[in-house]
Length: 216
Length: 216
DNA sequence: ACCTGAACACCGTTCAAGT
DNA sequence: ACCTGAACACCGTTCAAGT
Image (tube, rainbow over all chains, first blue to last red; front, side):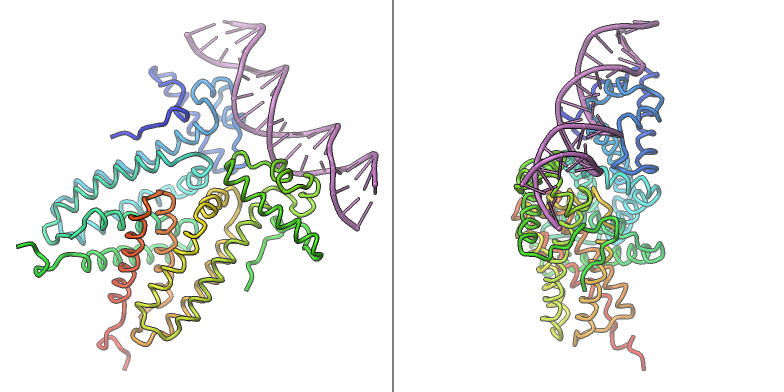
């Protein structure tokens, strides 16, 4: 399921021809480069257009305003992360729940870490815009995927899987972001990731229904 | 300990006279009001000055640039939160660790929730500026306070308290922020808070040294 | 000494004029 | 049909002129 883009932030034209796609990619790539090299306050429509090799006017054919550009960039990125989580979830159907949680933490962590500069740039840029819809769509996709996975766990049942799942995702996503923004040394960062996985496992063990709780 | 402000973001003049303090407060209050009523992209130096009843020029006597204004606002807020955490920590010296964790989660949660509109406005505004130093100073204060508290727990010892503490804070702060940005319904929000506290307790139980681990 | 607000440089966005 | 970039409105910041 793709994210639903609110009208006022939608890209102006869908790239149907190969040439347009190349231009669009150039604009995205230029945006990331400017964001990384110059920072958010120097991210100027003119600068992005220059770097992408088009005129400002052309850029405004693809994006109705600067916000839409940042929005689309973020959308692309979140789609990539959601894709990876969905893949992990379907690959881990039926394994013990401790393995599921480890896979989840590691997938999300890896997706954020592999291009950590871009991740950080996007975290900073994301706040410029009204990304509520984007976050909601992303959360929905991930929620669906992880709930489906946890349902197949052979070793546990929960009284309220939905709440447990919501908590788990809030904790994982929130912690990863927090660690990122604090710029901890890489070694400590990895230690915290392992502790996080451990913490999720302890939580799931404790929250799992015992035989005594089982419905007759 | 107060946070250390890097030179390029420091306020231009320290308000030593009562009149100046009133002006400064008016500017801060105006900033919050504009932020809440109009949003970050309409937060204009002119608009803030108008609302505060001073001219732009006067505002630039107190803050060398717009960033410094937002920085100072954030600094004030973080100092308030850190104050409350420090208070909680010294009040809970010597109680069982489960109570410590509950108090910690609840204090942080309450500090963020009580004026959640301001909190959210600041989360959005914070990214505009170089808040690394602010976050580092805040983290340092909180780290010190919670480590000191955990050292007094009568019922547990840890192999690596520093790592456990870092993890715990990253998880609590990150999760609270994530829950905020997702704008969950209030009921669910509270459920997640309770689950978070439960999760922290499970983690601490599991991470605690048993008698078998104890040094001879 | 301190405050004011017109003036300057720059940015987002548009649209008449090009091809 | 599509692209260009000068032009316009507006914002951050300054500083000569006021009190």
